[in-house]
Length: 291
Image (cartoon, rainbow, N blue to C red; front, top):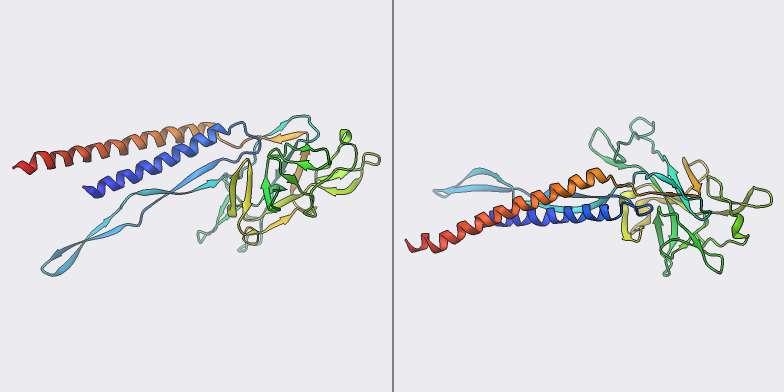
């Protein structure tokens, strides 16, 4: 009976985390560049139950001991591009591919951005990010391209981080800001000739986006840049930078609402199980104990 209490309590904790994740997604429906988070749940390891009789053990079967929310996984799918008309608003549109080691052809990714090989190995679709830097010199990655410029000409993200150029240095504007023009590859154009001026917005390609860690404020960091296989974008990469646009949130409002309600109902079900066990224990102590 006590084991059942623990199992139901673990279910309540898991459903609370699922509910919190869903409400976080709903709260960021209109956040620029926000990426939806999904909670991954797993069962605790099964326990093998045996019965002892005459000094020998006879296997009865396996017993599941509950479920837990293992991690929250970000979904890096493309959000809708929204035209703002502002010269310092930028949005990334990309369709990056990886070769399949088995066939040599491009991998086909499903609607969640995953490719599962025949042996069950999961590969995530590479993603492009704007590269920004905090005050400690750490590189961070974001899809929020709503930028501003300070008095020194430094381009800043909406969170106040310095935007980097393709060489990994802070992007500083030397030309008048009123006629800023950037091409589809991120090159800043010379206002007199319309040709690339040599400066370029730093766009990073993260080959293994599952290695990124969410920091809040729409930015991510990599604990191990080598494991994430991060590099700056090259001319041959299949991506496009759109000036005067921002990327909307990729949250599926309908699905998230369904998930939130499902978590709430499952939480209630586990709560009723605990109430049942509590009533049973109360009767065992107060009534059966008097017999």
